[in-house]
Length: 401
Image 1 (cartoon, rainbow, N blue to C red):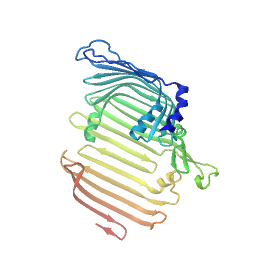
Image 2 (image 1 turned 60 degrees about the vertical axis):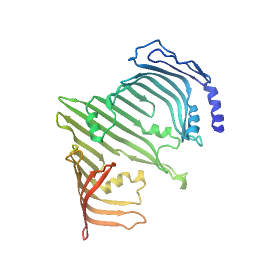
Image 3 (image 1 turned 180 degrees about the vertical axis):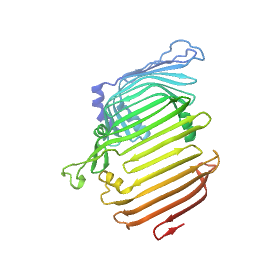
Image 4 (image 1 turned 135 degrees about the horizontal axis):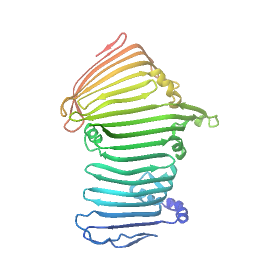
């Protein structure tokens, strides 16, 4: 702790200790007492009597607040990381009985996240700005404005978003009921520069470029409601060095143009609930699709394993692994009643299979077929209770049941 305080003392003196203030009122006009804290000032004050039904308001303001003070919390609670940098905060918080409401802005400059034990820098961000205007009412987050902007990423959200508090499908039913939009774009090259060791896939491969994009929105479509979600990674680039074995080796560029794209489209109709019209994940020679409702759903896939390994081999150190063959499959799920059993049926075919991993016996087969049926019921303590299961695996000259 002494080392941490001494290390940051020079920075605090240079930047000044900042000023923090809180002001607010409570119903009935009760007052807070002014209190001096260090070189800052904590000075809540009352705004006069208010009715018993009015919302309490607290205003939080901070100017040039040194985030290095997080070292105190790290020591007290044994946290693994501490923050450094300066923050500017202005937040008005209405403590309404129906739900809190927050309006304001949080900004950070020269933000750094460091390991608490060694003070080694893990992440550095020159500038971050987060304007906020949101409220929580009736289990929903109402966002008038919420955004985060930095050189690393941009993210924003608006609308009413149902907070998860029920089973997945019930939450989906509530999520599609209100209009909202969420979007984020992550610059992987900037993230790699911000991380002290870079963004690495493995020890000798460092990411140098790429983008990760995520978007989700719910809207009306005539008398129906539609939810659309999309995520994609694009233009992933990296460079391979010799690593510890050959640090002087010339870096070799690697590229994976379209690692994956995923999207989902769901529709809610009056009296029929939510149905997933299409869910799809594609990654070159891999494609997974799905559709259905809470009562019945189907997932299908096609895969060219050899082509997939060829696309990802350089980035993920698969050069010594041989994986070949094609596969098609279908998984059917049914649950007629909310509290009844869930039935799953799997049918999958594999052709021209070859799996060779160093140090393990090779597996080669012209054709493999898998069929399985499973029935399970919700357990009283949570999870699933297996009621019945049956599987058959068939190869060219073998059968396992």
